[in-house]
Amino acid sequence: MPSQRRPLVAGNWKMNFDHLEATYFVQKLVWLLRDAHFDFKRCEVALFPSFTSLRSVQVLVEADKLKITYGAQSVSVTTQGAFTGDVSADMIAHLGCSYVIVGHSERRKYHPEDDANIVDQVRAVLAAGMQPILCVGESFEERRQGIELDFAVGQVRDVTRDLNDEQAAKLIVAYEPVWAIGTGMVATPQSAQDAAKAIRDDLGATFGQGVADAVRILYGGSVTSKNAAEMIAEPDVDGFLIGGAALDAEELCTIARLALKTSARK
Ligand code: PGA
View 1 (cartoon, rainbow, N blue to C red):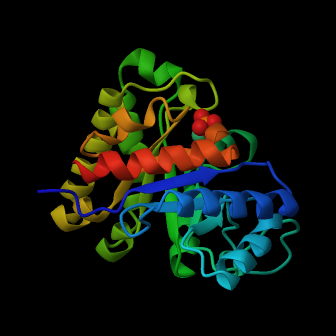
View 2 (view 1 turned 90 degrees about the vertical axis):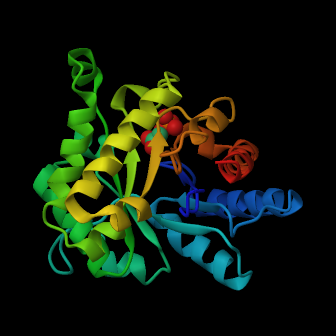
């Protein structure tokens, strides 16, 4: 039976593009997709600008009724108060965001985001009516030890153990091996599939097949138009979280078109 999950092509801009560049990018991307008669019903395209560009993206999307979705790259675990520099989930939701990336390896590395904090971020995102894109994935060391699947599944379990079925079904997981992020060293389609399947099987064992079938599992780490089609042909890979290649509108459009075309054949 073909997958019921709508593929998701998500561009994580990280700390790139001010709000003027973001505006230009969105217009260019939407124009390219429209020119290609892109079918958004069969493939979702989402952008993750920095906080300072979210409002500009919202204005464009709402004014022109654009079919792209968008979200934030991180969120505070608290709702309001004396937390200088933080941005709450409600503030993000009020800008029309559908998603928040949680636990990206760069956040885990450069900020005090431990497992407990990541669980709290997921809860905050869900409570504000958005969906978390939970990033997991091994470093070189775990891969060398051959424990990469257990490691990724364990990182998902750290979060899901506190969720009920309804909350778990709203999760999106991005399997992003740390060694593949921004390095040009992409995982093989088979190892992305193995990780996605291990995560899905574990969700099934905990929450049942309905939840396992609903959760979209993305691959991230040096995705480009050269490797995207092979990757998304895998049965459990439902899309991508893309960094570097998402800074080029033509490249992102090509990846989205490949994702749509290839996943339609699954
Ligand atoms: P990359 O980044 O595509 O540049 O490897 C992916 C990510 O960090 O989400």
